[in-house]
Image (cartoon, rainbow, N blue to C red; front, side):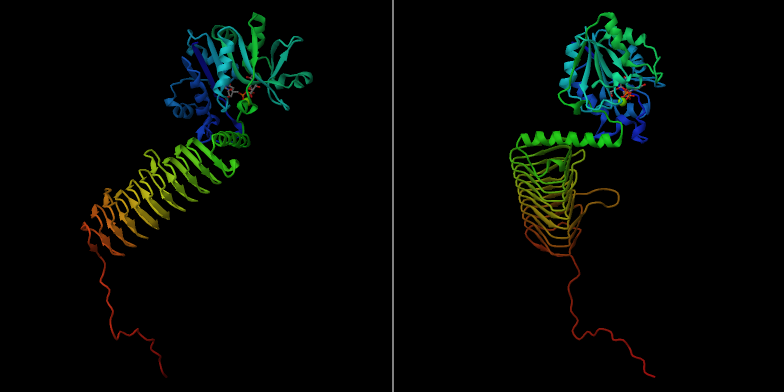
Length: 462
Ligand code: UD1
Ligand code: MG
C-alpha cells in the first residue's frame, strides 16, 4: 500500500524555554525527530513530508539526510493549517496519508502500521487512548452506539465534554483525496482562532466516511514532549524499556535505573553491567564481558571475556575501538579512536591509547600514552612512558616489536622502531631505532662525587 507520511514539526515548543527547536532536543542521544523518522521508515512510505516553521533552517539541516521533503509553514496557524501546507507535496498515487507529531518520539512502528492498515485508503483512523487526566487534549465525542462523531479541543469543550477520558493522541491516517478536501474546508472559528486538523473528523462523519479508532500498546508510545520535565520523564521510560529488553535477553544489569543506552547495544550471553554506565553509538559486548561501574563506551567492540574496570572511557568516534578477547582495561583507562587491543592485552590506570594496535598479551599497566603505535605481542610498556608521536606538524608511528620491554618513564620519539626483544632502560629518550635483543639506554650516565659537600649556611658573627 503506497503511503504518505506527514510529520508536523513547525510548533514553537515555548515551554522548552530553549533556543533549540523542540523537535531537535535529544532523547537517548538522538533528536526527537530522528525517532519519529525511524517509525516512519518502518512504514516504507512513498513520500515523507516534514512540516517546519520555528527554527526551520536548523530542523531542515538536521534532517537533510532523512530523504524527507520539507514544507514550510509560516506563520503557524494550527495543525490543520500545517497539513494544508503539505497538500501540494502529497503523492497523489498514495491513497493513505498518515499524520504524525514530531514531538512524540516513542510511537512504535507497529502502531503506526496499524493506523495505515486500518485506513486502507478508505477510512479515517484516529489513534486514541483513555487517560486518567485528559486535561489539555482533544476529546473524542461518540454517539450512543460508540460511533465517533468528532473531536473537541480542551479549550473549546463544555464541562461535560471535559469529563470524557478518551483523547486524540495527535496521530491519524486518512484517505489522501478526502484529507485534501477536508483540510481545504477548515475554518478557524474556535477559541484559539486556529485551523484545527481535528475538525476533519466531523467532516468525515458528514461525508459518510467510516471513522475508526486504534489504540497504542502502552501510553508511553503517545506521550509528547513539551517541557524539560516531560523530556526527562520520557528518557527514563525509554531507558527502562531498553534495560528490560537487555535483561530479557539475559544481560545482568546491577540496576536497570542506572543505565543509559544512546544508540545500539548488542550483547552476547552472560554479560554483566554495573551501575552508571553510558553506551553511545554502536557498541557490542561479547559473551561473558563485564563492565565495571561508571564507564562511558561509544562506538566500540568488546570481545568475549574482556573486563572493563570502573571509570573507563572508551570512545571510538568514527573509527571505532576494538578490545580483544579476555583483555583487561582500567580502572581509569582511556581508549580513543583506532585503539585495537588483541587478546589478553592489559591496559591499566591512567593509560591512554589512540590509533594504536597492541598484539596479544601486550601490557601497559600504569600512567602511559600510546599514540600511533604498533605494539607487538607480550610487550611490556613501562609506567610513565609515552610515544612522542607529534612533531608539531605531522604524526609519526612508533613500532615496538614483540617481547620488547620498555622501562618506566621513557619517551619514544616517532618515527622510531624498537626491535624484537629489546630492552629500553627506564628514563630513556629514544630518538633512534633500538636494535632487537639489546639493552638500549639513552639518559645521562649516573655519577657520584666522593667527598662532595652540600653548601652550608654561613653564620655571621658580630
Ligand atoms: C493537538 C490536537 C489535540 C491532541 C493533541 C495531542 C489539534 C487541533 N489538536 O493539540 O486534539 O489531543 O495534539 O498532543 O490538532 N504544529 C505545527 N503547526 C502549527 C501548530 C502545531 O506544525 O501551526 C505541530 C506542533 O509542532 C506539534 C503538533 O503540530 O508537533 C501538535 O501541535 P500542538 O500545538 O502541540 O497541538 P495541541 O494543542 O497539543
Ligand atoms: Mg501539544
